[in-house]
Structure formats: structure tokens, C-alpha cells
Length: 230
Image (cartoon, rainbow, N blue to C red):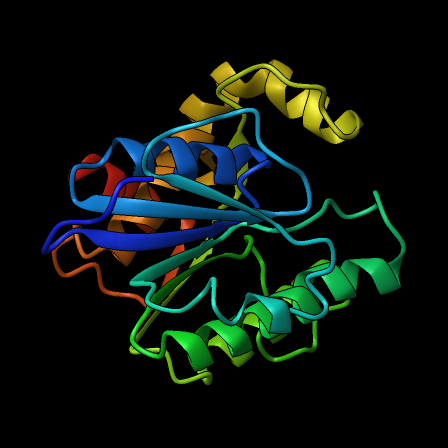
């Protein structure tokens, strides 16, 4: 394991086995300004790197065992989530809200000065009035993070995240969007974002490599502008 030199950042990534989290991990490992990356997940990654430490954690509903792991971190990239319709409503809320809130609680207690980049979603509703469960739950998680006391908390609300690398799509809607993506991207550029671009923006803003990013909430249009300005 490498030891960060002065000025290099220590970054923790939750959800690195997912599409966006995987790109965030690879991008962070390649950055000279990042000295060490801790990937926390329920499954082990088939990846080794001198700057990488992997920590398997089976249940994000209780992150108390991560107190030491989360100490001394400069930034967190939280990409843990699931697809609407893939799980029950109770499981969706647990993954979207409970896991996020619990991870943030322990991180803030262990590294109160850390920045936090959170993968939310287009249409997230902080008012809690939406009829769509995903929107309500993402909004609830956003509210908690913004009130948690982090010096810098950033909320990313991408629209359709285009899988740069082919994958097994989770449902028909995603298969359709991937098929029509070339046309959809031209007609509705602010409704799409490539997965690697989204990951890069989440890492850059958390490690202060995006000048005057604004925020704390970034809609899809804002994320595209961040990527195009770097």
C-alpha cells in the first residue's frame, strides 16, 4: 500500500462495484493528487493497485465497524444504490436512504472535514411530495446529507446515465434508451451523461479540482458543463 505524500488526498468510495462507482475508482486511482483510495463494498473487486485498499462490509445499515476505516479521509464518493423495480419498496428505501444516512453519520464522526459527493438522481424531491418513491427517497437522503455538517456536500442528479462499457441492462427501459442513445443524445443533450464523465465530475469536485463548482446540487445540465470545462 502506498502512503500519500503531502498534499495528496485520501478518498473513500462506496459502491465501486457499480457502473459509476467503478469509473470513480479507476479515475481516482489514476489521479496524481489522490494518494490513497479505500473502496468499501459488499463484494470484493477483481482489481489491485498500490494506492488501493479494499474493505468488505456486508451491511451498510450499520457502519459502526467502519469507524477506523473512515478516519482521516479527505473525500467520499457515495455511489451505492439500486434500480427502481428491481427490489421491493422497503428495500429501495433502505438502500437509498438508510444506507446513505448511516454511512454519512459514521464518516462525519470519523472525518468531519471530509467532502461528500452523493449520487442522487434526476427528479429527486426534497419536499417529499412526489408520487414517485425513488424521487422521495433520494430527496430525503439529500436533505439529511446537506444537514449533516459536512463542510462540502455535493448532490449529483444525473438523468439517463449512459453505460460507456456494454452491460446487461436491468430492464426494458434501459435497453431501449441504450438502443436510441445516439439520437437521444443529439435531441436531448441535457438529459444524458456518460457514466465515466459523471464519475469524473464527482471525484473532481470532492478533491477540489473543479474551480468554483457552485452547487451544492448539480442537475444533469450542470454536470455536463463541469465536464466540458475541464
